[in-house]
Length: 146
Image (cartoon, rainbow, N blue to C red; front, side):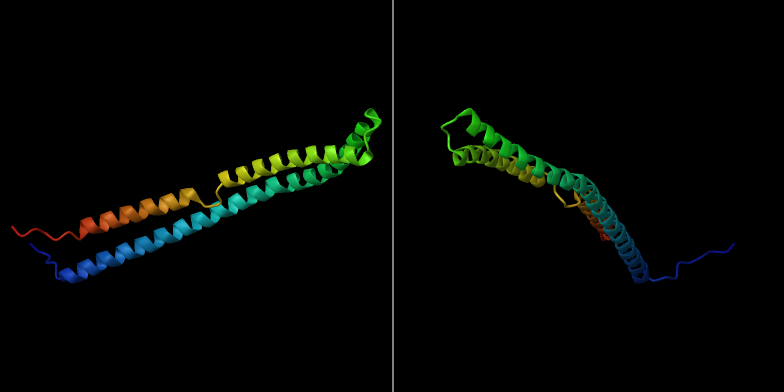
């Protein structure tokens, strides 16, 4: 009957274990970075896909708004005969500025709500780091002398 003896020293086992943990950690970090790149790339692509029709629509709306505001100022001067033309434009311009300010503030609020930081990836990195730290500490606990 043949008996195999473990001739590998304890320090070689530990260094092999540490080397494996480092390799696994490096591989996991590379995967998380790749995931973050893909997530950011998808977010940028979705933002660009949404921005193009918004920009085209905004240009068309600016032209239409200019024409409508001009018509509104002319209508105001026509409906109130003694109202000066500059007053009509001032009233219509003031209302338009107030509406524009409200829309701009609403848009700024929307941008603040949507963070460009890849939240899921960062959370995954934190969890993986905590798990790896906990696992490596459990494997390296010194045996109690008994």
